[in-house]
Length: 476
Image (cartoon, rainbow, N blue to C red; front, side):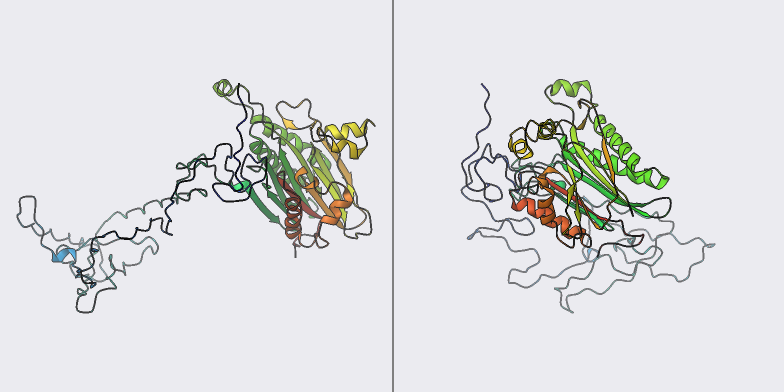
């Protein structure tokens, strides 16, 4: 019968040497699969910066071409100084002179004819319209004044020449972070050792005016399945509106990272498009959640052949939580168990949690079967009862509006953060006092708080100051 792969009993990751803990199946730093640990080679060559392997001692290397064998540079000859022959050994005929310019074409200054055998003139694309001021080949800096050949006169311009297009730059190949030698293919795996490479989404930060968001893979997951979208726009009356969307991919679903990314982008674009048209923020939030749902549902559309090759995969899914902040209104919306917290600037006043989880634990508390401490201590606590995805039971977007009577900061986060600051009071203690003025710094502090607590899940948080500052104001 099939068995789960056994974890190798090693104290450190074989690829990046990061410390491991009991039960790890993937390295938290590089994503290395610990189920199969290959034997460590007896000797690994040290790679130089340019990728070359240093030569071992005692190798008799040939004398370099640019040396006369005594450590002195050998003379350098231009191509025109060396006689050329054809395949039969006969001298080559001199090249024909360049055609003269038509009489009707005005010539500012006639250039001297190029000597026989000199190379053709090059084309400079960084200075269009200017003469070629530089020789095609710079003199060798190792030559003495006596050895350096005399400078050849500038070649005559080629009439009616078609400019050569510059060659497309070659994209730099990614090198494996594990073996430091293999090339990384398009799927993100090393062609040499097969290790999965860190993804660009492992750590993301964004600051948009007075709001900011940070997302991190955490310390236990091999990829980041969270995503966010933040932005600012103007209402029809010119007042500013701030928008933040945070999505958490459902790990038990197929492609959860794609689901969270699609949902966050769709919801953010929907809000930033509806608010300037005068749509009420609460209605705009409801429509944004529906747009996110459609985007995630579209990921389930796939060819029948794909379903035949992977019959056990299910539809992509994620949760969503968002907030819209204006000068006097705070609107929140959600599906799932990500949350919004209100933390007032005056810490003497109480903070509050503004959302209710779509989860098993929340249902037990609402039904009066358990208190909150008992429900969230149960292993089924984080089983969600609402999500975005083609296989969701029924989509029920939740929205709510608030009118705070004082300044504060709105915290929009996934359970990767609130697992380490579950109550509103704990979240308020974790939020720095200057969060409204330094949102990016505060978001980094909150992510660090989750990582210091264990980082067992992806961590994403967005911070919005309330009320929204006027147009033109930004973070300090």
